[in-house]
Image (cartoon, rainbow, N blue to C red; front, side, top):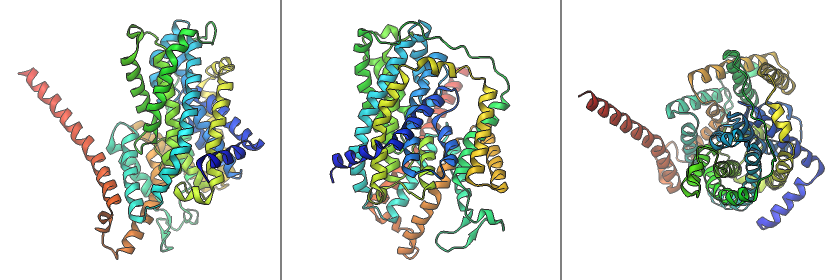
Length: 505
């Protein structure tokens, strides 16, 4: 079957009444949560993981994808009206969007963000549908050596992409590896690091870890900060609709933002933040109104928001085709796949095409839903900003606990939820990224399995990893991705020290 036929089949699956309901719930929840400051789509999907444990896999994953898309858009509302990004990828939107809101042009800023998200999401989802099969064809020739090398590259890039320090990212990743060791060895059947506790023989539950690190850890961190002054919400003044000039200044940034965001999101070391900054820099360079940048230029909202949503679709390319997450939300979605015994990758397209293409097609539908929801309901989303933080985070804590009990009614599981929540809180205080821990727990056993298979085939000869051209190239790229930033950082420090010494002389 061709890509068109698969996509049409997927649209038929996505248009089923229950799947439409899941998509609607997803985009509504995603937008609502994206609007709330400090709560991103990763936390929302983590909270819903235990709740959806007994639901239909296709419907649950469609809902998660809707949350992802909705959360990426919802973050723009707080950026524009509150100057507080609900998601890290919305930081750039705050630069110009909040200036527009302060001038009484919050409506057009929200409108260009909504329409730009729709245009970018639509084009990028179609791009996902046509690029994914080609990536799958390449991935199908991978053996144990190539898969292990690919995962090493993923580990390095994930450690570099999350957080400010590669070393801290790697430390978080190795915490995930340590947790992944717990349980029964997949190849030998021997118990490892279970300490005689029967509950640990099945290993650490990814769901419990994700909910604890993202929800419990975040709640404890916010609670520890104490009471803060109320944020000033900028009211939406005048019409929400854009003028003819706003349209003429927005449509090119929408397209440019899509072209920048999608490929960056699809890279193993991608992520929405890079694309939004590049889009903003591009619009600033190409604009015919440079005097408005820094004072409320509509191009500075249109381009980054398009790049933001295009990267969300791009992120699903490595996730669905190779099983590699490049964002925190993608890491939690990977846990969602594993919750149903599914492993994203090239074989998933062959063994469960209905689920994959139904998920891709549902993203097209979710885009239309987002446009219909976000333009008329701006007033409702603004009211969500007035929810007191103590109520909000107390609700998250309660929901996380009840969800974990529902998925696994065990006192020991609740103890692990609290223990990992404290770990997440400590990591936040010390500035260590959270997502690499989840990635290490999920992909660590798979990397170990592929490495041991490769060594078994070669009778223990480690040089077999470098005899495959693909594996050798991937490992070389991984080594460069690890070493080059360290060298550049060391050079930068050296130049700063030399300048200080020169100034003292």
